[in-house]
Length: 283
Image 1 (tube, helix red, strand yellow):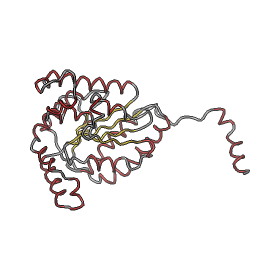
Image 2 (tube, helix red, strand yellow):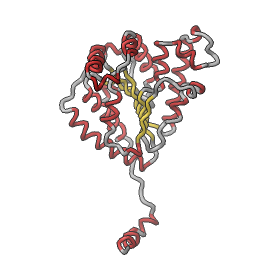
Image 3 (cartoon, one colour):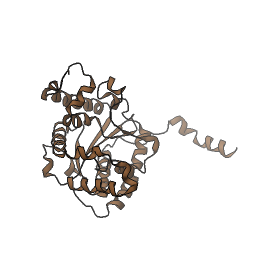
Image 4 (cartoon, helix red, strand yellow):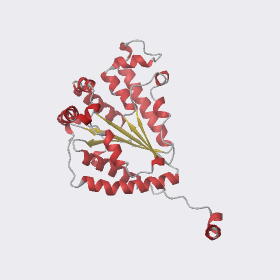
């Protein structure tokens, strides 16, 4: 699965958006059970946290991927957070704050459906949004320049390095969708009544800015794919395949952590197990 890992500079236009793995749904069902068992062990072990970052254009399949990939997880060990437009309270803090306060504890998986990367993606497409953050050093749109973005990328890299060094295993998945497939999925939302609620006219407005988003996604991925927080570009035109690839990457990576084991029972408790059994059986 190293095929999808970004280890050198990439060009998104040269990366395939469609891959079809035969029997991907059946393979996913088997693999997600194994991942679920591993998550149980990690929950009991309590040494590592796992942060799963999902980014992608509208309709790239983030919601359904979360539903299908993490279906066999113990609900106590996984938390999902979707980040929308910042609230008034969130805007009174730095842009990383609302993400930092919901980072997964050791032993848990945290899934970010859209992430702090929106602050170097949407805000680069719409730099006027930065003015709403009330940053002391930004008084006009002219201040949102290349130096500003360089600093913000450095902050993100430092943030990820910090949490990685303190026990968080980071996966960053870019669901790489083609413009043609997005068109099909938006039309489907319009044509199927039960999916109408997912549509917003704003989707079409953002679609017209497709090339800008691709440019800034590519730049963000190239600047922030590090050994401690790698990006994976996932072909997203075929949803079952994308889900299976994401699951396999996580499982294969986590299995390499040989120190993740079920905690052993205290020796003093072990010595009295038969007594405890007898007490219960004699009730």
